Length: 111
Image (cartoon, rainbow, N blue to C red; front, top):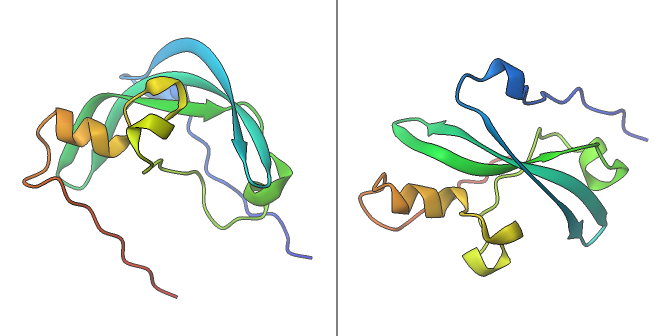
């Protein structure tokens, strides 16, 4: 059985731009669910900066699939209608704040 990965955890108190929102939601996945509390912070990805990007902070790390996964979190790229509590996705925030030359994104998968 794989051993758990030491996940990096976001520390809201270490961010000068984090704002708690207070609302909580239960988010269901195919393999389980997680409780999140909403907040917002400045999101920076290379030259892209989104101010007051809404995000959800998990209250505990569910066993599956996250506990054994080799990643620290998820970045929601779903359609806006699927977003928790109607909050803007990262891509939506980038578009709203004119951070993209075109409304296009891509992924590169490597081994």
